[in-house]
Length: 106
Image (cartoon, rainbow, N blue to C red):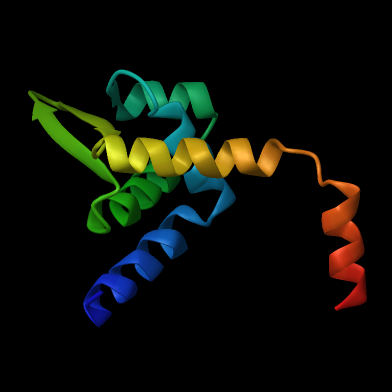
């Protein structure tokens, strides 16, 4: 694997690693949404939301398209969708006693 791929993957995880941005990505797991709709659903101010979307767009995690005055966002592709889904499913799993014991020994 090329070192640049590792750098890019690390940047992707940093961008998605913020709780607010991760919630935003979860909201985008479906049809595209315009910024005003995302602000309403998330309860986030437009200026904050725009900043979060700018970070996600710069890392190619989301795509956007303009239709008149509206800008619509969606997850960039199925790789991003699978990554976000897998992270959330993994995070929701209860810890097994075996894993907890192994961690306390370390």
